[in-house]
Structure formats: structure tokens, C-alpha cells
Length: 248
Ligand SMILES: NC(=O)c1ccc[n+]([C@@H]2O[C@H](COP(=O)([O-])OP(=O)(O)OC[C@H]3O[C@@H](n4cnc5c(N)ncnc54)[C@H](OP(=O)(O)O)[C@@H]3O)[C@@H](O)[C@H]2O)c1
Image (cartoon, rainbow, N blue to C red; front, side, top):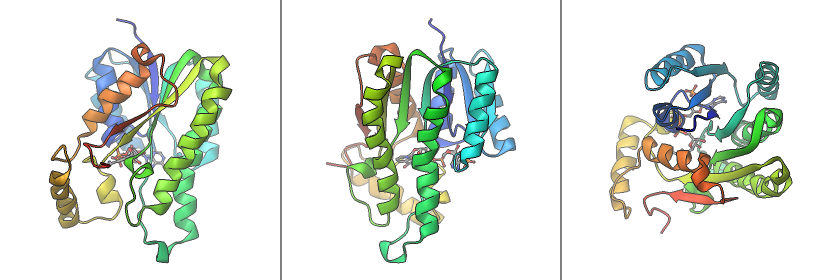
């Protein structure tokens, strides 16, 4: 097996954690990030049990550019290099357009757009040639959901940047592809302010999609592992819609 070293942002929960477990179980080295020390170290321990134990935890709040820069400098000075990045950390703060606030736009764009953009930018010296970058986008880029205007724009903004970067970074051997998850059962619904009843209603509504159920974070991990791997070496600026047919 060809062991690789990947960095996954936001690996303390949901899609990031499931992806880290999948990659660790496949024998890869991992650097994982989190913004809460306790959650980060408990995730690292859980992930390490599945692989060869080589999981490096890194604290970083992606809403804070200085923390991204500090993390990248530390990784570079430690001589760490990556075969790929999973730009996964993200937030969903739904808000009706009539209640739009500057704080919502600033926070969403900081974490979902500036975060992955500067993570990739500051980690360029740590990326091997070749390297695969996977962005965790969303179904919202294709399908409209009320209250999700800012969130949708934040995901579309990074996709647009990635299209250009696939050209600009080509000589460095860097390629960028995205997955667009549909409704996936993670903590994000609770963090978005939904109560238990609303979450149950959302999960139930997924019975109406062609797949007939909500998606699981592990299903995203499988697709991310493929985009990181040499099996997808010919792909640039691809978007894997893993939404159970919800956008149809
Ligand atoms: N679940 C869905 O239905 C769905 C659908 C489409 C796209 N997505 C996208 O999938 C990605 C992962 O979401 P998820 O559903 O797995 O959500 P999740 O369970 O809430 O996990 C999000 C991860 O990102 C981290 N994170 C959030 N804000 C951060 C910040 N400012 N700095 C550093 N880390 C931060 C979280 O850390 P904490 O543990 O500290 O919160 C957590 O590790 C996101 O980009 C989301 O937009 C999700």
C-alpha cells in the first residue's frame, strides 16, 4: 500500500471525522485540525485507533487568518509535507434574507471562503508534487434552499476560485476537485439552530428524494478518498454531486 499524508480541516465531527477514519483505516498518515482542544484530542485518539497511530492534531480556527498562517508556518518549519488537503471545515448559519446581517455574511465568508482559500495559499510550501485538494462544497450551489443565500454564495465563491487555481497551480502539480453533499446527518443541523423536532422533520423529508433517506458522513468519506487518490489523477475542477438525487 502506498501510504500518503493528508491534512483534513474540521475533523472533530461529521464529514471530516468520517473521512479521517476512512483514510486512517486505509493506512494513511493524517494531520487533523479542530478549534476546540478537547474535541480535537479525543478525535485524534479515536482516529489513531483505526490506523497505524500516526495522527497529528493541529488547533486552528479557520475564521481567524492569523491562526491559519501560524499553523501553516509551524507545519512548514517542522518539514511536514502533504499529498493532499481536505478543505472541509465549514459552518451553516441560515437566515432569511429580510433579516440579513453583516455579521452573518462576515462569519460565513470567513470560515467557508476565506478559510479554505488561505489554508490552501499558506500551505503551498507544504504540498508535494503532485498533490490533490478536495473542497467540501454543497448541494446548495445547484439547488436553492430558503434562508441559505449567504451560505450558498460562500460555497460557490470557493468553487469559482478553485476553477482558476486549477490553472494557476497546475505547474506545481496541484489539482482541486469538490464534492457537493446533499443533506447529511451531522452536527451541522443542530449548530444551525434547528431543534430536535425540526431535525427529525428534515430527516423525514429526505424519504422524498430518489435515494429515499438522509445521507451519512461515511458516504462523503468514500468520495473524498477517491478524489485524493491517484485513481482520480486525471480529474480537475470536477464536482461530485452526492445528494441522493435531491437536486433532480
Ligand atoms: N451536513 C450536511 O448536510 C452538509 C451538506 C453539504 C455540505 N456540508 C459541508 O460539509 C462540511 C462539513 O460539515 P459537517 O456536516 O460535517 O458539519 P459538522 O459536523 O458541524 O463538522 C464541521 C467541522 O468543521 C469544524 N469547524 C467549524 N467551524 C470551524 C472554524 N471556524 N474553525 C475550525 N473548524 C471549524 C467543526 O469543528 P467543531 O467540532 O469545533 O464544531 C467540525 O470539525 C462543511 O463545509 C459543510 O458546509 C454539509
